[in-house]
Length: 173
Image (cartoon, rainbow, N blue to C red; front, side, top):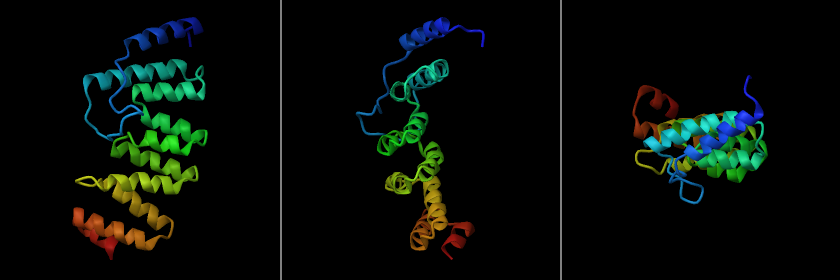
């Protein structure tokens, strides 16, 4: 609250100069959804947090999205794109998120009226070995909440196959 706009701009310029090069999973390369981080990834995220705080109110939506992409803030990028109804671009950004963060964003796609996009994002991760149990559970819950009982049963069986347990068995029953 004690920082002037000129000081904020000066700090933002210094932070931009200190940013490591863009991440390998830039919008031009295929998303990894990986949770493996390097020191550069950590630096990019931390400096990006500061930059977004300093410039959030000053940036246009496109500049904000570009900064999120540059700093690996894929969740914030997807949120901003969803807010302006750019569903396809939001899905591309969300595809870069690790499973635990993607699950949080899927509900926002549903709230924005794009449940098919959310389901497609989750289902793409099921082809991995091992498949994401978090996303399987999200698909199961989503299918049940939308009265898609056959799909819920298919996902419940997959959950049981991947991680047999009493609770997984109860879902199948």
